[in-house]
Image (cartoon, rainbow, N blue to C red; front, side):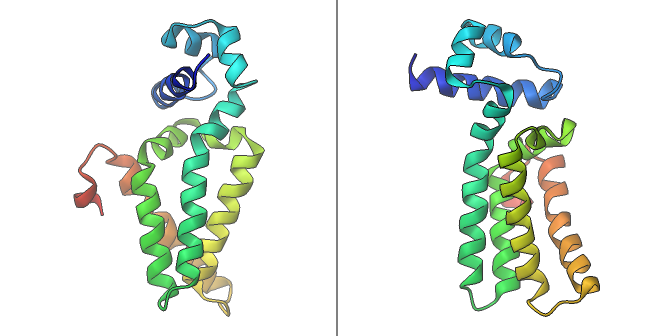
Length: 161
């Protein structure tokens, strides 16, 4: 088993989860798509949630890095929004996969890191002293970034940005 097999499993999983959904895709079907045994898939990933975790790690790492960078910027709000948009654009196909059936929530680790990253983004956009209305407005501003990226994921990145 090579790292190439692991990468092939992840590519197949992203495609299958995007097309059919996380919950509707079995490990056996992933194995068949890659041309390996189910046991070989389970060698690399003990369960489907572990596949989601591996798919989401780069997004989560980028999200955390973008928010850390934004926290040090002169204009926190603009840096957080631009950083988040860049992360969404860079991982638009994973976000589109999640739209089908919230497959990213299959892993508690992924859910927790994603939630924490979004709370950090919300805090940076809303400001430290924001009241509930300000935090809600910030959440809406952040949320509106993802819809066009997900809905038009195949469009050129420069145009989406």
